[in-house]
Image (cartoon, rainbow, N blue to C red):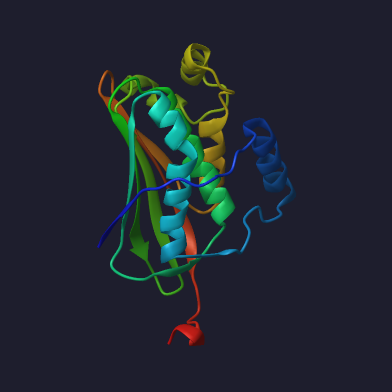
Length: 204
């Protein structure tokens, strides 16, 4: 099933530096950084919808198209931290728009694995931006990497966004990655392990 999303409503803004420091503190103390707010199939689609609504003005200002698609096999009810997930998606979408001068940006989500009590969901952001050389890709998710420093110097930004995405993905027992072709664009992705919500009698 393919859900194509569109629309505009207010979204959230995040402070990259503050969030990175907060995540690091949580990791060092051993305290759980992730909340237990419920994320179900509709809410995963809403995360993409919120990203669309938040970044639609920036995309229009740069004359870029912005779209999203949620792939699934039917209603799914998950347990996860929707605020952190939105932060991660927003960091990737913000970068994609920032580094794209033509074309557009597509956001996607899909379930890629499942066991008895959890699922692995992949979120991705593909753009038609400047692209990144293959020998530099492994540096992108490090704080203040030379590659991101060069990019942020050109376009503006803190240089912390991708490091935050990597840290939060690891805290969610997931990982991050990127495929990119210079001059053609990039696809950034992260995975997150979400719990399976218990059956809700009200829905049966």
